Amino acid sequence: MDGCPHTGNISASPNDIDPAALPGADLAEQIVHLCVFEELSTCKIGAIVGISRQRAGQPMHRIGVPVKPSGAGRPRHTRARAAVTARPHGRAGMTRLAEGDTSRLVVLRHGESEWNASNLFTGWVNAALTAGGEREAARAGQLLAAHGILPGFAHTSVQRRTIRTADLALAECDRDWIPVRRSWRLNSNHYGALQGRDKAQVLAAESGDQQVMRWRRSYDAAPPPLPAGAEYSQFADPRYAALPPEARPRTESLKDVTARLLPYWYDAIVADLRTRACVLVVSHGNTLRALIKHLDRISDDQITELSIPTGIPLAYQLGPDMHPVSTGGRYLSPQPAGSPAAAVTSQGR
Image (cartoon, rainbow, N blue to C red; front, side, top):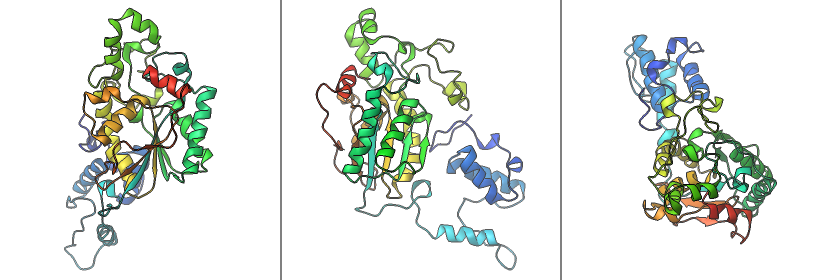
């Protein structure tokens, strides 16, 4: 099944959906259904609309480009398209930033999880926050409020520790009413056969510290894969039921994480950033390392040295090209020595 070239969304394709079978009496209602319920990208919606028009004997043209009718008068839906095309558009149909304009992005690693505290490789396992992790999440929201950085949109993974972190942080800065979108593409890196294992025991049993650190910190080294039926496999988890089996990872390197993250960055997060609202992304250590590598243009070799503390917001000002005005961003609080965040960061996950 081919995915959209912009989003990498391989959960559906134009040929998988029959426009005639969609709810709604007209094309506009069908498009709303596709946007809300199918969560398809604009590329795929355009293809489906084209198929629908072709079947109806109408000309196939790009969404938003008006076509003059051959007869007298002008259909109402054509006038609506002309009004839409009169507005400036950026990626995903959002307002394009003018030269010199900036967008505010805040990235936040979830608070300490129960498996962080137990020194276990977590990955896609759905670990909850510790009491300390919940306090970190709440304090992150307090820091956002204290700095006057109030998100208009939020994005999380589909894992409990980021969902809970976002809930607590947004409540503390009185932004728990804003739209929140969740995606598996923001999940932690999949640790393969390491998931559920004690980090110290893995270090002692495997080929030394260098190999373990390559799995945890390097760009292109993935741990051994986890069998689909293993104890800590999420292969049958209902969160991922819509993903084809070949899209469900059994292990991932940071390179793999980057490949599944960036389509969501461009298609969903950048679209929100172009509205000029502040966007909060709550994710996991290695997933945020992949995003920051992209934003700050960090090399494959240098990325091994980057760590992300838990529970401390990192704020970026992004230019029209969606890269930082100042490389590295700004943490809203120093990382206290001996804190749970510092301890987890020293573990590398």
